[in-house]
Structure formats: C-alpha cells, structure tokens
Image 1 (cartoon, rainbow, N blue to C red):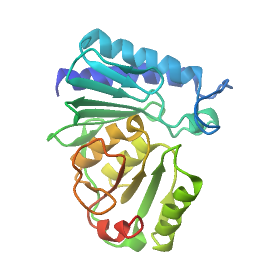
Image 2: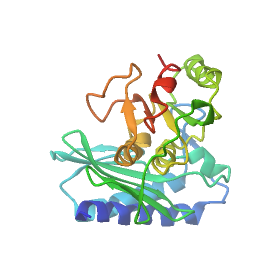
Image 3: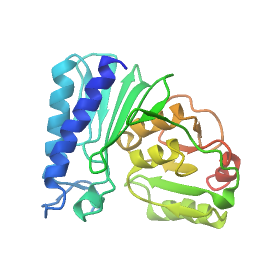
Image 4: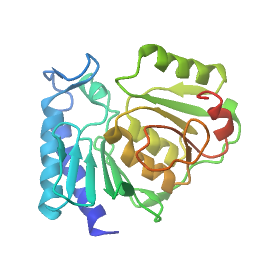
Length: 256
C-alpha cells in the first residue's frame, strides 16, 4: 500500500468523524444549483478535515473538491474529493452515504477510497492492485441472468427529467430483478465491486461522485464501456455502464 493511499484513508476517516458528529441532527440546507442539490455544515466540515490531511502530507498536489472547487498548484497529481456523497440521504436520516476520494495522475486514475462512516467500511483500490474492503479482496459476482440482476441508476443533477426517465424506464422494461436509485454513486460502484449488485448505469453524474468508486469496480473485475459498448478513451468519461461483465450486452440495450 502506497503512502498516498494510506493518507487518503486517513483523510476519509477524518471526514467520517465529522459526519458521524452531525448525522441525525437537524441541519440548515444551503441550495446550490437546484432544489435537489444542496449542502450543509456537515459537507463543509468534512471537506475541511479531508483537505487538511491531504494537504499536510501532499502540499504540492492539486485538489478538486465538491464544495471548494479546484486548487491547482501545477502538479500532474490531483485529489478528487466528495466530502459527503449522498447529502440528501444524510439529511433525512438514511445512513446510505460515503466519502469518496480519488487520486489521478495526468488524468488517469491511480488510487481511490470510498469510506462508509456509519458501517466503518473502507473500500479501496490502487491501479493494478485489486480492490479491497477492510483488508479483504473483493470481486464482482458471476451472475449471468439479466432477470436475476440488480441494476443501479446514477444520474446527474443537470440532466433533464425526461432524460432520466427514458433510461430508467428502459432498464425496467428489460425486466431485471430490481432497479435501484440510491443517490450514492460511489457506494453503488462498491456494491458492484463486492458482488452485491450486477450493474450500474452512470448518466452524466459529477466527477467527484463516481470517480473513486469507478476504480474500485474496475479493480474488482467490472467491465466498463461507454453507452455504445466501446472501451473508454479515458477515466473521466461521465456516461458509461459498469457491470460484472456477464450481463453487459443486455444492459447496453437499455442505453443505446
């Protein structure tokens, strides 16, 4: 395990300490771009704690965080941080949220962590090194039957509502076992990576929402392509599907 990854894990735990402090409290919401897109003092406090750890150990790395934006210091290395993925769930008391942190080098994913502070689950991966949950190797499952598959849909705030429903209805019409929409992209990819679900459709969600989970899924054996079934040209593509590889062709039909 590299020093970079160890530091990212420490930063995620620092943010998690803040989130546990605020979880269950009544919080004031600050609207951002839309009514469904907002932040709280928990988001801000978590981000400050995370960035403090990262910058202490890697002061010459860039950072791109959801609330404070981009800090560019001329490095080829960038930390991509979401201090609270699943803010709405957090606010209404649903313990389905996480802290995703990804590290890129020249635009390529090299390491990531996704920390679930309530369950104390630390998912992590480094490029070429496999994916892990609390020290145990995880892999996608081997389900081949689409009718037995659970598919998660992840969509960005800026997508038109009709665009969301077009993809969602197509997934349902293909008759998978269940379609979920948890509004926690990073954890959705971790569910795929650990064999709990079979696929994720990522439709234009924000980069900090999915990037860390994407590497964990890849390192767990997931197959990822664009909506046309072609290999991605880079890691920063915001429209793609990820599956266990065995139901990929069927799921592609829902987004083509």
